[in-house]
Amino acid sequence: MMCGGLTGVQPATPETQQIVDEVKQHVEEKEGKTFDVFMAVEYKTQLVAGMNYFIKVHVGNDEFFHLRVFKSLPHENKPLSLTSYQSSKTQHDELSYF
Image (cartoon, rainbow, N blue to C red; front, side):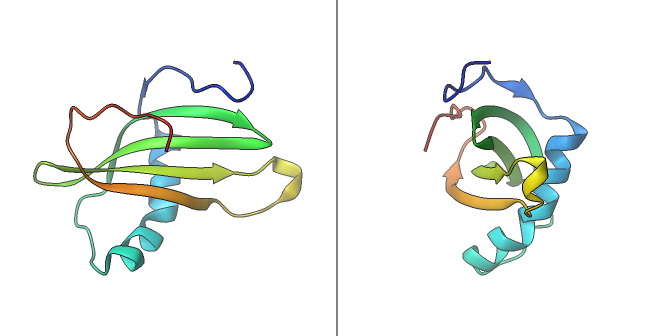
């Protein structure tokens, strides 16, 4: 993996879903609503001074969100951080840097 570059798209894993579960409340607070469905579909990563996860999340019906979540280095012992997100995405929208 090249530092700074995005990996290719990967199918979501249990670890990816765990990350999504941990930041779900933050997205709900920012959107002012709750989501019955919040399922990781696919993701890309970016190696920085930690790891950025770009995750496509199904939020119900035909609506998807793209999340960018930062995971710090293990020795820093910091919680996951929802860096940014994009709403009103579709299943076919490509995950890209944002």
